[in-house]
Length: 318
Ligand SMILES: [Zn+2]
Image (tube, rainbow, N blue to C red; front, side):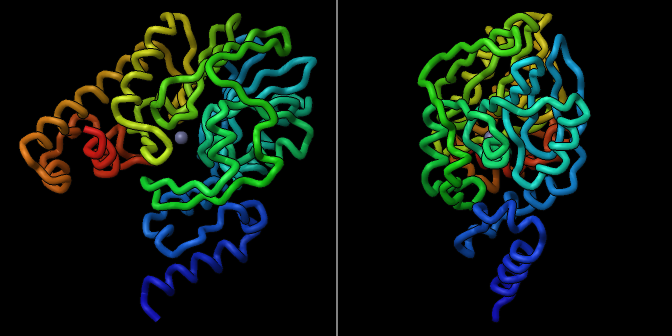
């Protein structure tokens, strides 16, 4: 038995044995190569124990900060509305964090895009009685097996309960708990399913993964993302907010307009440097060795995306 195969079997046993198995069954990898890069498996494992912190923002809106995508929570007489639902294995810690806000049930869920670290809770939230709203491409990707090359991972079709019950194409507005929510689709950026959610009266803007606060973003070329799309979305976000807007990123701390501008500037700077090197005929290895992102690597490359992974995604798109 080769080392690789043993490793794969060990991970299969891990997935099959832990209590995580039931929750993550639909995410169990289907092919050996899927685990070459452990990002998804590691994220499932990490989320099972990661703390979920509650931060109160404005009016009746809070945010849950954990291992997966940030969750916005709008409370009130209509029950809770969530924007995003984290990684499936974070269920116990997300449940506890929600209960610490109040005992109201979750009645509605909005997905900012289709990725597993934002839709992982869809099934259990729906089972508890919530409806799910998303962009039509989120439903499309969740309904069938979808491979993400950047993660070397094949996501099996999600269970029926996890599929959004309503979808929209460009824009959608709803009234919940006395708040107006304005939803807008981005042109393909991080994926082709990205939407923003603006809580109009509170002026709180959830960007999904079009904004990672002081973290290099993952970019999903397999479902429509690109570095140039990610930069266009960063520009759109800056144009959308004012200095008073509270901005909830997909990942990282809650921020504001200045943080959106910094994110745009960092992406543009690294994109230009990588494009110049690629035009000179440099290979990806040579580009990584040239350290074009050295100014921000220490702060931005510590969590999900390390500098060389991020540079590979930029290189692919220029
Ligand atoms: Zn994402």
